[in-house]
Amino acid sequence: MPTVSVTVARDVTEAVKIPRAVFLPWPMGHHFGVPFHRELQRHVVLAALSLLNTADEPGTILDLLMKWTDVRREAKALTEQLLHRGDRRGTTSRRIRETEAEATAFVVCHAVGLETGSAASDYIQL
Figure 1 (cartoon, helix red, strand yellow):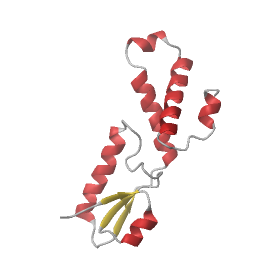
Figure 2: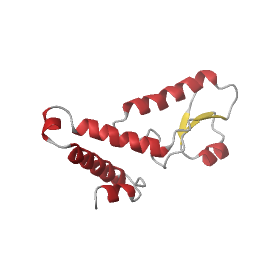
Figure 3: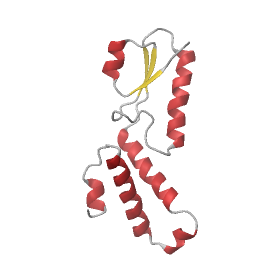
Figure 4: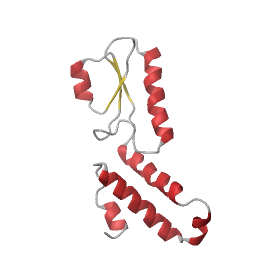
């Protein structure tokens, strides 16, 4: 049965010599990005499935060079979208919505062990 691994540890993947892999330069444990980001997760899965057809030799590693900072930024935008739909959007200011989205992204990323840096805590004044 053909296999493809999704990895965030290129050095380990090369050492183990698995048949095919998709490499993402993201933190350990976040092979498919952030929760609820279906478009990104779909992109990773489709890249892995496509590699089954395109890999010409054993040990092929496809690099998906997507920056983690971009993924993190998209997580904030997605959080904002999920939090502020419908009637509530008209009853809150943009500043409140942005602060809630940033705070939620900070808490979720911190809870799952992602590097949050100081920018978020400075922004939401923690």
